Image (tube, rainbow, N blue to C red; front, side):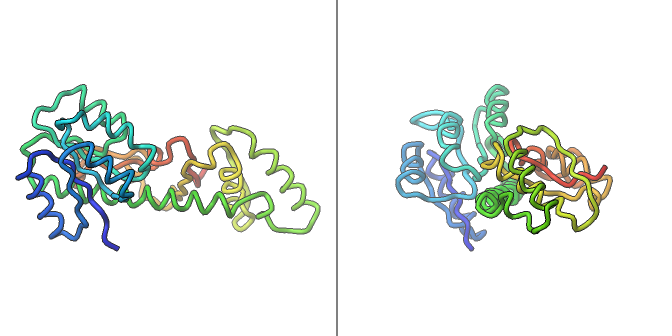
Length: 247
């Protein structure tokens, strides 16, 4: 499947060069020269970019304002920003809005490629989580807990009550095969966070030295081999749920 990359750049030479480069890399590239064109592409033409690479300051406005307005329409795409005169407030605001990275021009193409590769991986995960959330909302209800015994009926009744409780943390105990994972999904998809992602991770299977990075993420250069920014699982599950923490 060929993924779409939306480039928003008013410098025609740079926009053409970036388009050529990423088409050669296998992307379906769509180029917009300003925010109005980008808005038309996203809302009227209904393109679904996996990544959006945008200049920060464009002739018809600031790309951060545009990102803030578009986030509700494109939930999984990652945003990368380029700017010729970056400022600390802009970079802080970009990251607070959920931008993947913020790079100053002129940007080394090899570095940009690394960031694009990392952002692609993150956006793909976000899209998969959103798709799973939509499917889970349809599939999981207290009735999904199978069994005809009185105990099973009691559990279904208890789950129906618990779905209305706004948990911040919950421990579900039991032997392997007793339905702990199913119970967690029923509570998540039947509760107030049903429209938010549920990310399952078996922490016991993660190497100890990678656990912190996987849960909380890292920034470029945080350790040897950290070439790009990585969103931690807890950030990806913001307002949703993370599961399978051994105790």
